[in-house]
Length: 314
Image (tube, rainbow, N blue to C red):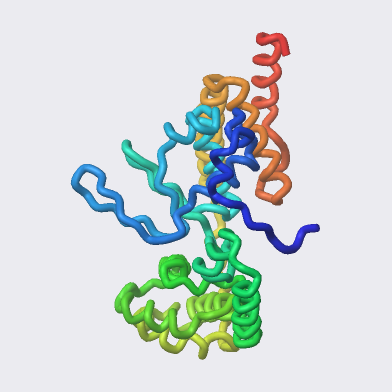
């Protein structure tokens, strides 16, 4: 059954079965979710106060490598796979720590309040459970027109706002823009519509001609752009035809660049161990499944794997 969800308690990370190493990739992903911060907190590092938001994980590659039974190189490759598939944002790395942001963290959360969840876990009396159920029934009626999977947490909504704010060209008025966003984006449908509105606005002749609204102004009236019909398909002007000499020079330059990339890639593969090469091969397999612009797994990668397997007697 693919729909629905179950509760997984964070203390499961301390179960003896969970400590068996090395972790599988699925176990590593769930472990990240279990580690994810669900309330805002601050951590003091070298006299600098770092704010950790809900949906973020404050950790280090060294710590994860020890607890997962992985190499740090394998962890970096795993993060790259998660990033390419839209599960995490770009990891923020420093010599002391790594900060990871789970994309759409709110989708992994229960719609129950933390207080009610704690009471259910603790085993409340039957009478109290009935009262709680009545309250939940009333809440369901009030929220029946809302998408219950969309996060209503202020901090988690701020993460979504930052995601779309990055795409807006004029950064003036961010504080007011966030206020307008919080007031107008309350459901998954609203989130889809504001992204459509922004795409329509950015493709409009107005923006192409350099007339861009302040960020706060657009987010106050973004709904006007959801059904905007004035978007014209941009047609690039025809380039000047290449002369035979220009074409030969361009093709030679492209070949040289590709050769340099191939040499660097092959040198990296030769320096990897079999486990790391396996991760690299899986990345290519995943890209093929997701219709990324590659046609096959590089033959040189497969040759290097075969040679190392032969040397190690596998």
